[in-house]
Amino acid sequence: MNAYLAEFLGTALLVLMGNGVVANVCLNKTKGNSSGWIVITTAWAFAVYVAVVATGEYSGAHLNPAVTIGVAAKGAFDWAMVPGYIAAQLAGGIVGGFIVYLFYRDHFNVTEDEGAKRACFSTEPAIRNYANNFFCEVIGTVVLVSVIFFITSGSVTLPGSETAAPIGLGSIGALPVAILVWAIGLSLGGTTGYAINPARDLGPRIALAILGKKLKTSADWGYAWVPVAGPMVGGVIAAVAYNIVM
Image: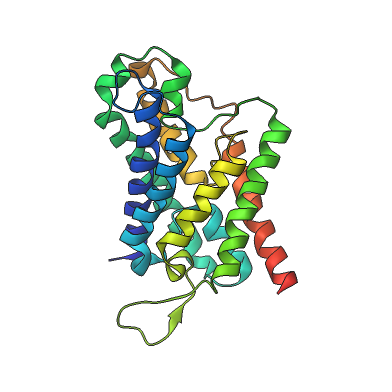
């Protein structure tokens, strides 16, 4: 499988299952309605597990522009591949967002709460304070990317290759990453919803904007820069700090 295609499909799968659990918890008349934060954080962790298992050997399963930027800034990924990876991740996020809508469309139709419907696509803060929201996204992403660096050298040997390719998450296996994301969600996710991934937020937010009239819900573009800029900055900080320490 082409690496860019793997990033597209993996991110779409990540968003389908991750935002799918939010829909299951937040929308009216679902089996999982009101089941709570533990369900959301746990299912998001396993969404990461599933997506990394599916795509790790083909692209390294970055599935996150902040990870791609971080690995490149660390010096373990070719900068020439960064735009293609990010484009594929964003496109996957958009498609995943649309599929969540199609899957839960009957429940969107019986839900009037705009915030609940918007949460099925994108994050928003518990308390809107842009400076602190940005800080929280930066710190959450620093934890994500730096711990990944300490677990792995960021390389994977692709089928048919005799040398390790520096492409990131796929080299550590899926379960440790899932546990890491679960811990971040439980410990640091309560302020902003822990996007820690621009594609996971911006992609579905674009899908929401397209579906806005049908869902009678805004995409909240005033906040949208936070879960994009924060994780990007966090990924770079993690890379610089890792290179200094190591």
